[in-house]
Image 1 (cartoon, rainbow, N blue to C red):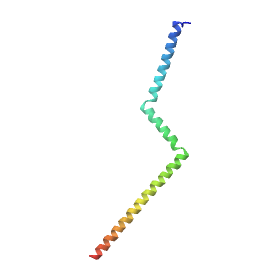
Image 2: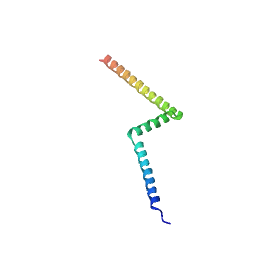
Image 3: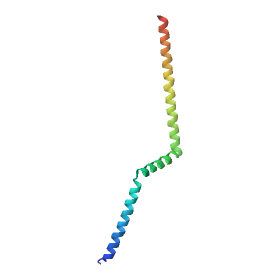
Image 4: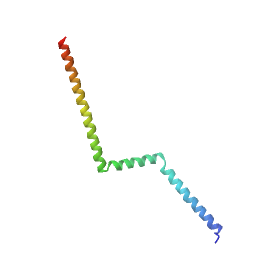
Amino acid sequence: MARDINDIQRDIERTRRQLASTLDELATRTKPQNLVDDAKRGATTKVRDPQVQKVLAGVGVAVVGLITLVVVRNRKRSNDLKEIQRLLAGRA
């Protein structure tokens, strides 16, 4: 059964409106500010997750521990060098 020309034109117009709506939505979603806002929202959601908070706390403790270790080792090395210099100065 052949379709009426009016039915075809209505289908074409409906398809155009749907396509225009889809293109408008894509344009809105891909605006840089909207992408930034989505990324912020996603990051905020992740940071609020208790598991992620525990992991971040563990990483923070590890970083502080490493920094403390480096500072202590450098101080010890510095004190050792001063002691060697003192001993060498006493020999001369």
